Length: 310
Length: 275
Image (tube, rainbow over all chains, first blue to last red):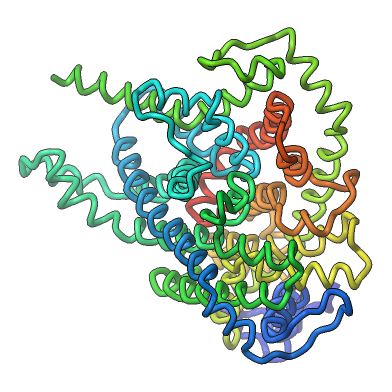
């Protein structure tokens, strides 16, 4: 327990401590210090080490590190495999998020009517996001099993023929996009729906009085008001989709023939399976830089403290 | 015309619910089948009550599933408690004390929430190895606290911002110090925020996978996702009925948890807090 504050430090203004500088510094240090030191040790330090390692080469047999300058990055940027992986990650991020934004917004508009049982269905929709990704991968591997999978069977019966969901290199990435969308469309829905619920009644009343039909009201009144929430959900989801790892591991393990490997998965394989720690760190750092750009965009759109009010 | 619209709406509603829950129901059905019956075409959705005990018996007794549940509960629980212990005062400080660079500090901490886990996984793995904590609960707890801390701070800032500052002022008039104001007066008021951040911390840590895969290398220390992965990714032929039972048992704790804290989850999601 710290010593009681001197009487003249008791006065505070809105959001501001008028306490004497030393007193305030001690308060900040006391309340914030532990968290900051903890993050320094287990977040900042590892990130700094990763940066250093990305300029080094690890020798597994001798257990030594050698500086090789930008060697890892040069290898990376000239490797066709890396660019393939970048492409997969981009498809997953942009195609996935586009699908999720469109469907999620449509769902929000759909749930903006009084329907019995809607609460239950909304509850069900939250579930996919909370599931362990490995299990999500397992579920879909079963549903899409080419011999006995239920969903695969339905598609065959409907006359689509046998689709190589997880075996055809041209299809597997889109299967990944589909499963990712199954899991994360509800996220966009929740954000957009919350915003929709917060819109003042007058918005809709004004439209009805003017005789606008549902489509016109949605297009010219509702949607423009939802844009901030939609953009927020899209950028947020984009940063998360960009670093997808677990789902790849559970659903496709990067295959067939590396056609679903993402940047995270590529870094993981190089680091933990081939023990190329330096090269893996370089991949990871490319990701860190892209993520930082994403975060900057996100924090430009919304003040981080005000995220709750989007 | 309006009736037709209503009917279509309800059909769509049922369809949405089905798409959401059908994969899980299918998993449940498969987990009740005998090994051979899984391979039936056309797929049958019969629930085989007689087989179900045998399948779950294999998972719980032969595969020692309860050990993994225990490991997951210990690791998730301890990490979340410590993340709150560190994160709640930090959230309070960011909400109430203005100091030089406080906004920058807050944004920087929040940005860790978005860092790709692979970028820290390798150094953390090497650090844990160096500390001799490989294959121990502590080896996962230490990094998991750091992983969920930004989330806790983020959510708590929002909740403290909603509590009128006049409450702090009144308490300080009464002679309480800052830490006393926080612990005696504000904590009870900020309880919903703590539940929300604990909820998301728990879900995130319960599902964490990448780091666990490498820090833990003996089956008796594995958490549920790692155990599930090692039971499931074994090269074929997989016993799909057993795999499905593993899947069901992995999901059920989350299911119950979700039902209990559902309203907090929506609150947390709109705070931008999932994962």
